[in-house]
Length: 157
Image (cartoon, rainbow, N blue to C red; front, side, top):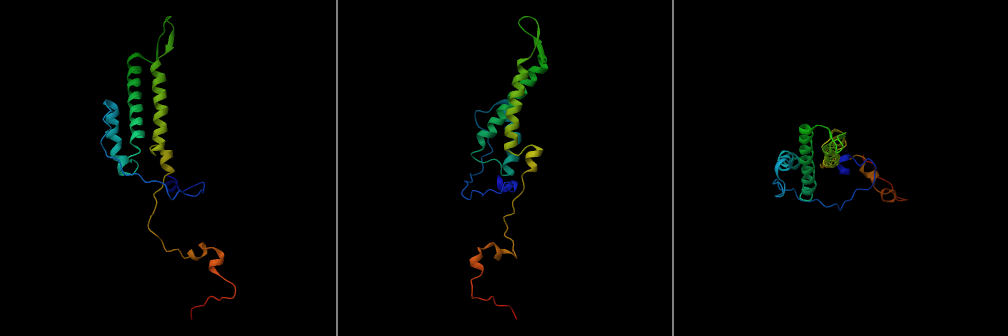
């Protein structure tokens, strides 16, 4: 990801970083209902962008589960309201509000990991793999390789 983000910290890139194969677009068999529908909505786009690989399947599935949990909690909040009667008859915040808030927090973390928020997406840039002719490439070599005492660089006539 640092290559995509432009390596802002200037730390050395891991040249041996594994590159997993792209994932299949089929949802895991244990995803059902709204979670499976969310998978079907997102997986093709993430796959096309190269953000869904075989080792990312669990992360996306977990996001989809959190999304389904959030939708269910929001449906219950619509049905019963944000404030309900407690055991003593006093108003309390619905437990579904806590479920919805927790699911939103989990969803946000996964959305950022997949670059699916505007701020996360703004830190991602395409990498141009085409080599360019660098007129200053000779200066990238170590100093002693460029010049040794007693040698002259010939000048073109």
